[in-house]
Length: 328
Ligand code: GTR
Image (cartoon, rainbow, N blue to C red; front, side):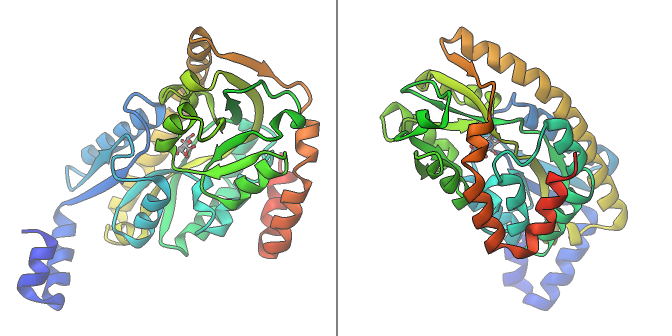
């Protein structure tokens, strides 16, 4: 019997009791994932699901929906917050509009390196961000790596901020990224990930920005042949669960789910390193021109206004930003 059937049949009071009883016996967690099935994140999520099913003796199962089939990321984030969806493997970038604490990792060049990001996210900074999420309906169980994002486009290589001028670039849905591109005198278009390939191909935008595995996995490299290693954003990702699903579990089940997510993050981080290298090779074999940028200083200097605006608008996040910047 489905929950809605129960609600119709018994009325709310009895239905809640029935749901609780069912939850203690068997719970299926529906989980959103944007990536293709052989992506490091997807493989790690499969391992997470297997561990949860195994350790709970089948009491909890995780049904994974890869390839973004359950909708775009901003919508999925809202659905997990509301408990309509149980879980999601989210990038923190599109979370900023609804969960302000997550925005600190969307500030350009905020983490000095990937190892520093790991250390901070596995410590106080990650805890503070997860607390912000909890207040808005979900929590982070573990942090996945998403490398560094760089610009790519179909027009020219980017070596200095002046090369960005006039380029139409897709960004994830968050005003911070619009501000970032505008600070470089480019034109920013927020857009869902799934629309980017066609948009570059048809010239709606000239390019976008992403890490090598995503640039490669959904074939953006075929239509935007200049990949310039600006590495302007290091945005971690979460394995997130709705408060509703979390609160419906026993303490023992929560422990199993948490541990499985942490274990999957260890695997994801290892797979990520290998995938990044493989993607860089594959896109170059596919005709992409990659250029490195020895001095990122001119790009960083242009971001002063983005920081000033953010800190002025979010005085309560000044300390968290300071924790990251001083914490390496
Ligand atoms: C990827 C990230 C996705 C999504 C995508 C995008 O790197 O893993 O969750 O945020 O970028 O650009 O929309």
